[in-house]
Length: 273
Image 1: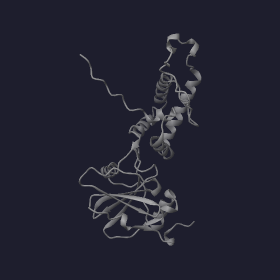
Image 2: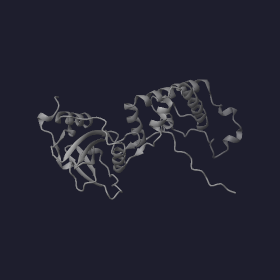
Image 3: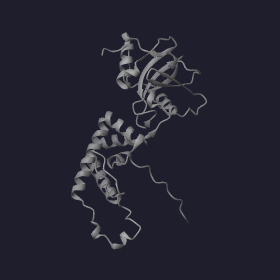
Image 4: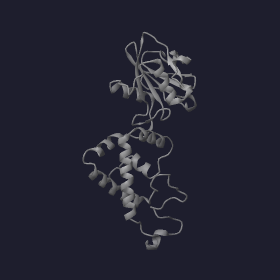
């Protein structure tokens, strides 16, 4: 009986990063998470240190020691590095795949032994999801399902503007006009541990409109790109630009209620400097 082919597991983002193989959106998402996640940075440093020590003590066989049949005309060994491949700055150079896998297995075993206190399990939880594109609907559903709790809160207009200017520059100097039916809950990061929506810097304004959760994805207008509309019939998405920002409101209460009330900040609302 012929067994059906098995789907290989997705590549590990950390392994790809250490080998200098992450590119584009995936690399930007990983480095954004790395910049704000001390636990992930410790794991990268630990893995890099272990890989470097193992690489120093293990040398792949030279071409002269390999069987002649491995270099038949018109073919290259399966483990050879593609010509022109250059290591990324500050990272371990990609080794031939069989050697790289061998080093990675050793490094993983060493890391597990060195992290019996639990740091390895923390790393696995943080990096298990894939890095890629996250839809506005996925951001909305994740925040709602996790209790709609913000990562940080601004209690004044000045703090609101300062958070946006710090993230997006002076083009982010917008403020929310007060409205009794709208309760601002706080802010979250759109990429989380799953990927990016517009860019790694995307911020999410969390609010309740007539008691219902609503989010507004914010980023620089220069980074705007086509976002996938929600597939759920209960959700709508609306777009607007204000100043240097592009805004996407994801809501279940009908038309846009928040993005039309985000306006350029007056000078007195801006933080000093």
